[in-house]
Image (cartoon, rainbow, N blue to C red; front, side):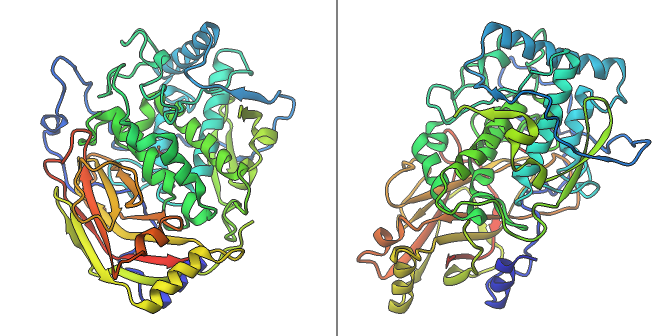
Length: 497
Ligand code: C2O
């Protein structure tokens, strides 16, 4: 258990129901579930491909530890919008070969379906959500996906006989790149190995700018705390909870309401080739964040760097690899992108909502507290006093929601009249979170999300001339208010960290 978690428990502010799971487990059976998909007219979806069981094939031998292949050149991963026609051809050939491998030999651990199942296995292991380990909703998220993409990249390169193959990334934060990248939709049918039948987003649908614009991304990157950016042992970081989840939901349902496979469900997400371009961008943002310096570091918890996972490599050899192995990705994994804060205790300063299991329906909900003078000065001095400036962080704990639906929630301070139409900017907007369920069909398992926003820059504005602090949670879709949201949450509080 991390230090932060202990100090929160000491202060009695950490909910009894807190778990290590971050992403939500869907909680009831979907029967005859296709009626729930809300299909756009004229668009056919394939049969449900949410796997019952995604256990990886057994290896005849124990895993061989990862070693860097330094005979390979370090080559850039490029934007999926900047690929040359020969890059596109290579990418399509590689995914074509990966799909063929599954046809020829479904048991080959490198094949398309087996590759997608690796992701399913590491988000709970299929239908019951309990079989496999869970790497989402925690600081395992960044390093695990880096390892996964690395072996995926090696396999693709091997299948086309080109070890110089590198995955592209989809930078949805670039205002001109908010549609699916063209190679994945052109042609937009099964003749294109990068096409996926289970997509709700059309080639021209754009991710709503408010969720992914450069200013919003700057805000996420501004925190110097790994606990906020990368997450902790028991909570997700701000990119995982925000744009990462939002883009998943968007590809499944561009109106941001339904949890539609493939991308909108973690168990099926990696059955869409665009998953790997999306995660390459997430991986790039990890590097962008660290490159800013200013005390930003990878998690310093004992045990973060040594956590170990296994993957099949391009020769079908089972490998073990650690988070520490992939920190220096240029040196060890042979790709690049163009382009130490000591852990301190969390001191909870102000509880804004202490009720367990509060319910958030489709309408906005506001919780208010008076801010006593002493607390106010502690908050202001935490955020202001250089050089020992600490971060002021808003926590929302124990978030759970109903299965089969995605959820996007906008968070405002001192704006009790906020609605789904309220602009996501200005001093009262703190951020948003997007929830992607793990599976359509998990019967008996619950999980929770813990969301954090670094509000250090906003806090003096928010407290100016105010005796109270109000936090408003606003469920939203791309079209405004959702029809039927059902979210519960536990404590909301501010802490100096
Ligand atoms: Cu492993 Cu984007 O999820």
